[in-house]
Image 1 (tube, rainbow, N blue to C red):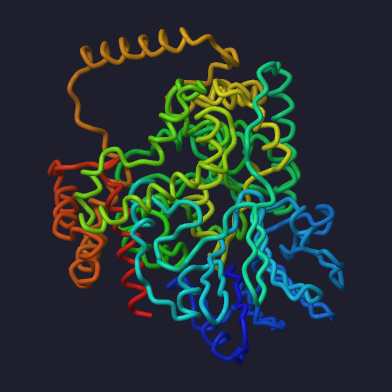
Image 2 (cartoon, rainbow, N blue to C red; image 1 turned 120 degrees about the vertical axis):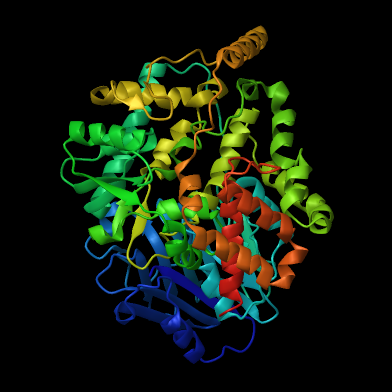
Length: 614
């Protein structure tokens, strides 16, 4: 189990017996082998740092205490001075025998995916430092006794015996986005360390600062062909470096863009296999067909994994222990590769489409004049009736302003010019960590994840893209088409068409946007007039939920068993909605896809039940 954490006490440091006992008894998976645990506790001047992993598994945990009393525990991978310091076989970073002065500055300058906990004897401070993108989660609680921190939120709550009071603003974020956003969590008093953060903890205070800001600096005179070649070269270098750090791994291959880009960028001298999951309730998906074609062209082994009915109820408790209920059950259950294949590290796309434009809502987001409108759409709840269907009206009304203030604050530090740029930067900084970085792999006992899209040189180039090239991921598609000629005929599963290899101008006059909108409205109207009536296509998540009565019954039982939940939810309407979805009865209200509220309720209710049973 890859978990790190610790304590910084303001006054008396207690004995570590309770810490070791808690770590010994804490396991995320019901099937976990408990005799493989490797626990290390380092005592320093103001408390303890700890790590928990598995013997003979590359847990990506590095720890050391030197003869001067300095101590480091780190989760993830990094380069320190260069990548040669990384031990591929053990999956850990090589460290000096004695940490040099100003070692926190070295931790900040590293590239990688990591969270580091470092106590510096000279300054008498604990430094908490993560990478630019906050790729490894860390949660903390400050009390009058001290600061408590851990990469697993449930273990953190258990270690410091923190009461589980749900945070209404965090719940509203989960309901809106499927997960909490930014520093807020769904539990009062528990916060998450933001990306590119340096927290210096002393007996007097917590000094928190961001050492890097993700801001676009668009260049409007880029040559598409030359620039896309440069961007791809940096991506390929990032993918090759990470693959060599793993040497042997597994890649989740879908019919989308991110995974095919990684697959084609892997060097020939690494042992990688591809896998694709599909629902057993119907015929294999388009993703499976596309992935098979890509694997065949690239001469890689391709495996498939069927998601069987009952997958939600079978994995819900384990996923809650791993993820802490921070992510909708619909998202978290898909994030685990087949453990039986025997891989302890695997490559993932994850954040690839955030900076490249996946969440740009409209072409008008490329106009600076439209920035206030689109940011308002993100920060404000424009249709509260759908929220109030599921939530307690008293809770919603009393915390709506708090929610909107948090959302407005999250956009304040983003200095990019247009709404398109701001939304991409915000998604990478605040939204993406919710469902990709706070996922099952960071605390999983037998596997970890690495992402080539987080290469620093690659992202520095992406931040030069003009807004119009972000819309509908135009530049990304253009780059993939021209960089990967072997895959040009393979369809993009989301559209059922191959990529075109075309890229429009980087800027347009304002009249173009009006004509573009008019054309879109005419085409949409024509499709409405000519379309034949057809039943809505059922997503495989919805089919799996409907075939898993134990999962939905457990959600209902928890809602009814804990009276405290009535202060947060309208439990009667939540249960009615779940039963309507199960029986294919059209519900009175929808939020996003029809199954999304059930995934959100599942994450919260399972968390509440687990925390009240510990």
